[in-house]
Amino acid sequence: MPPASNNMADLMSSVFIEFGKTVYICQCFESSLCFLLSLMKHELSNGESGAFQKAWDFHSKKTLGNLLKSLRELIEVPEDVYEFLDNCIKKRNTIVHGFLIDNAMHLFDPKGRVEIEQELVELKKEVKRGDVVVNRLLDAFFEKYGTSNAMLKRDADRRWELLNPEGPQNGRDLQNN
Image (cartoon, rainbow, N blue to C red; front, side, top):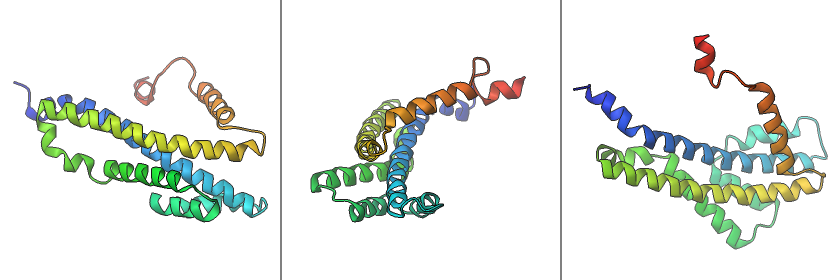
């Protein structure tokens, strides 16, 4: 019989993969809001050199709730949008502040693991909706300058393809060669 820890790790791997994907979406949401605020601050500074980086450094140290308050100080955010984003922040906080610890006992049970994984999928979708709203605000901002999220994403995809040509698919492949 294999050691319990190996079996446990194998059985929980799908939960941990889903948790990783969910936390990634949480980070995207937070980064999108930081990016928007930093762009706005840069614009308010009339393009002052270093203003974007200074704003990024400032905002990236703030809580997500404080970022939302900062957004409201810079632009008029309709109450329903504010409440929606605030709810997304609460979902994000549920994920990153103890979700696995709070559900630790369910990880031991096969049915519990499936339920946790399903809950993570739903939480991820809700946080993603918040990121979509922030990205729509970014698109409105970008439109003034003749660009868009889609254009930036295409450029990022091209960069990815340039830096990740056919061949080794991950760092482990590179280490083994």
